[in-house]
Image (tube, rainbow, N blue to C red; front, side, top):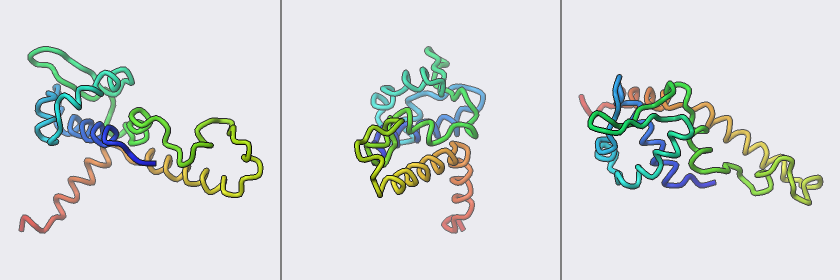
Length: 146
């Protein structure tokens, strides 16, 4: 499993929106500038995020993007399942029930199932809010400002 640029950038974009939306909308231009990303590249994913109910898009002068859900309830699993599709460690686990002809005799299958569960449990436990809280803590712990 390798997280693509799309998955990483969408996560950063949603974190930026969560961090800066306050009571309003965040412009794509400001997100792109703060994150050092291409505005055009990020705009490719907004319709998919809106369709999934993660963001609201408002067009016009006071427009932009805002999260529809609480950052404490949006998980990395939600984001990566949307952007990456399958998050399985091995191809035979992509279908349920398992269609692999060796499924009944595969000695390694429990290891791959365990890895899948560990990855999913971890991604489900990490929320946008927990990432923002962790970033705030790292900044406050940093001795470089002293």
